[in-house]
Length: 169
Image 1: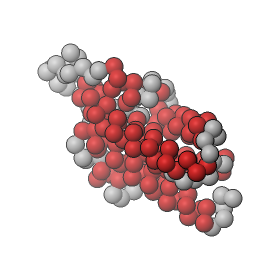
Image 2: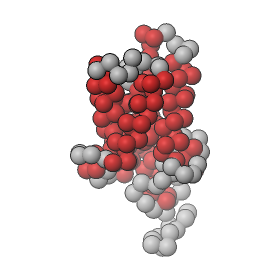
Image 3: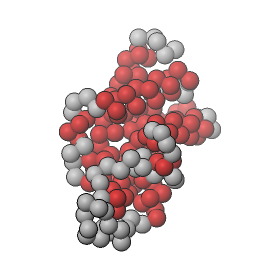
């Protein structure tokens, strides 16, 4: 068990699976801006996967991936945060994976849409407009994950408005 200088009580060690999920196989250790690395990797992986799928499967597969990231991310993020002794460790990036997947839902797999989705998600994730900041206050892994899922919803809405305005065609 590990201790921190602020907390001399031994902290429980997170299992390897939690570290692998929470850090997106180690991407969360990249510097600078591990959240941006994780978001960009998510977009890249989505492009690779979506290009091998018929377009009618994009929505259900992207939705399934987003849900899986949230369901696996909540306990993984909580375990790693508990081990690190902090509310939201910078190396935990599964929240960015989930949020970015939400931002990509039903978007065309085209460079403009993907780039706008990435930029909007990162902006909303960093700025945290209301009520995103309040979602961080939720307990444990839920708080780590939900503000990014909401940022993904904001980004998806922004991308949809740009699509409907004809700016992403």
